[in-house]
Image (cartoon, rainbow, N blue to C red):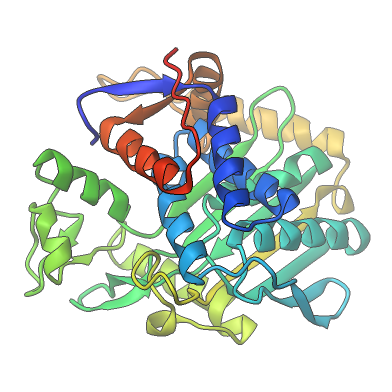
Amino acid sequence: MRSETEVRVTEKVLRNFCISVLERLGVSPGDAGIWTEVIVETSLRGVDSHGILVLPRYAEMLEAGGIRVDTPVEVISDQGSTMLLDGGNGIGSVVANQAMDLALDRAQKFGLSFVSVRNSNHFGMAGFYAMKSLPREMIGGAFTNAGPAIAAWGGKTKVVGSNAMAIAIPAGKELPIVFDAAIGASAAAKIFLAMERGERIPVDWMIDRDGKPTDDPQNLLAGGVLLPFGKHKGYGLGLILDVLTGVLSGGLFSTSVRGFGRVMSEPLGICHGFCALDVERFISVGQFRSRMDEMIKNVKASETLEGVERVYLPGEKGFLTREDRRLNGIPLWDKLVSDLGKLAQRLSIELPIQAR
């Protein structure tokens, strides 16, 4: 669901533009580099709702004070394999990157780790942090809560955030498995894009303010509420993620978390969780990789339904999309190009869109 025309730009163009925007708004070069890497990698893997699309909103929050650039991460508790951090309402991607690195270091030492974070902000694609475990031969996990956007199954008010989780698992010759999902039947960004194009949406994505299924995306602005995927299963998973992030960290949870992009001057108070598991504490890395390859081959050998060309593993399409976009450029649609252009003009920064 996007505009009829699009232009493809190189990752280098987007990376340089992001860094220029963030540094112009007071972000240090080091933090701007980390934040940009998350944004660009997200767009490369095809998670367009969390990539370059959100840069203008990040910029607004920076300007309004909702994201703070001068607050270091504070260690509240350090028990060896577990840690509790306070993000100081800083840059979500920078806080999360630091927390995941700590989780990996502690798992290297203790075999298993969990790092809990409170008072953070939107951190983008959860899979970015989980995948940091892959070069270190570990299984990695990243979890986050979010502002209320989704109804409890059977309810009609926003009580659960579009909470998300990602698990990354290394393999051998096969691609790693990367499961990355939020609990909503659809991302709100997809509904906004449907509004722009005057399109309808599937009726299992949202209910209107009266609790009735709707295919009109405009209802999102009129009290509509997103539904969880998998009915009661997605709703239950959303609550568990809120426990593992907001409740466990002593931070905000459920309806107390602020919605992304609603009040730009207010920090979101989002909470995260990061874990890592050293597979070599169980079997050798070589054995693990070999067994993962065997499992993946078994899945790929599955007989497909009529009209289905092949079975994909979780995250596989992201790796394939990344290859395509590194070669052919990242697609930007009309309204996004316009929004980035307005941001560049406001900050007196050049936006050198280069078609591929």
